[in-house]
Length: 223
Image 1: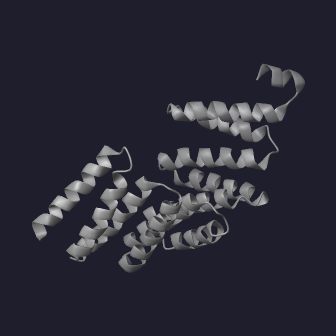
Image 2 (image 1 turned 120 degrees about the vertical axis):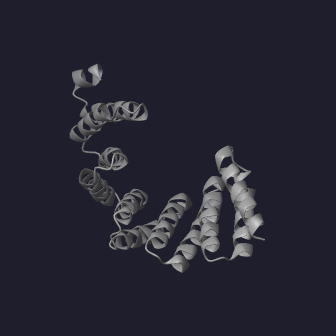
Image 3 (image 1 turned 45 degrees about the horizontal axis):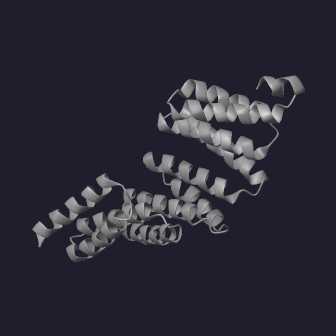
């Protein structure tokens, strides 16, 4: 940082501020992290750095349920990402905004997911596509549209499988199984949970494996 000051290299200063912010962020020093991310934005003309810094600030506010600043920073992140045709970053922030509106039971959440889905489809990033589809599934479920939720979870499974993310595949199979249980379709729920279990075994997430096993055991009692 001192050397960057000496030579007037503001872009390097910006990247240092961003990395310092990440360190604070990782250790839950949120006020310091926000300050560093903000300093990063102020010292750069690089839209990619601004995209990441605003997204990081949005996540902090999102995590502590400060809705307005979270939405503002997600919007700024989308704006700067758009200037660089960064569809992945735009799609991710739009999905995060959709999640906020879903938690508030606001129908406009689906508008954000729809745009996010369109942008994600223009990329080859299967993980982001899975994130959008899974989030849409959760929203449809919350808004009382189980059939649409199942379709979205199915898409999420496909995308996460393409991304070689067995943990996410298992989680989405499990979510779909929960809907089947609600509709008393025990055989279908068992089949989905068995698939979830197979993928969960490819991970080191013991809690998830135990959770799926407990769900299967409960279904066995139902016949």
